Image: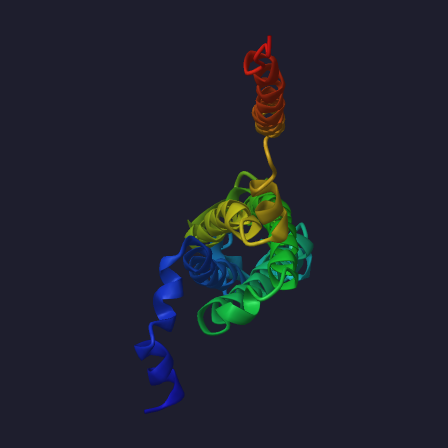
Length: 284
């Protein structure tokens, strides 16, 4: 039997039923969805410019863009409706910093969650052997919770800028030919942003997962264990008071008993002395 089968038969995978390992497994899946829907995106839009002179028209202007959304580098050519001359334009904006930060957080969160899940399943005894493992796990969980919040918020703002910059109405305003009423400019189709919207949703879901997992990781640390067994001050005071009463009662009962015993021989001795005159007879 191979080692994996032996571990599975021994019930090692029961750790996934615990909240700590179960949430880590969910973090692996949600991190994959987050960076896949954002980092793997590619989209585009199509415009048409119908000039008065039909020979100058261009009814299919394709503009493609993709991750990391350096839109100012996306160039395209459009007709000027003034002969065969064409105008070279580019989209506006640059959301690469927020998009790359979001994907970087997702990738590293995926790697750490995967490694932590493996440790929970196969090396749980080593993990709980001392406080170092849970303490490092707790600190990393807090850091990633903060990074998910910052990254998701930044990417949500970046996505909003991408939507504005790739809006066909905004792009048409960049064309000189569309500023002439005699020319007809229109959008054939707009970019589909559903996967990018999904990436933002998964970003905030990852934040909720990591923030919620802070408590379960904290329970594994020595901070929670030491705080759980701290004695109650009132209980300690009551215990010492009862202990003092016990010693006082023991002393009182012991003293009375000793006093009674010490009186015993004295009374006997006194009885012997008093019995002398009682047994005395007058010879006369």
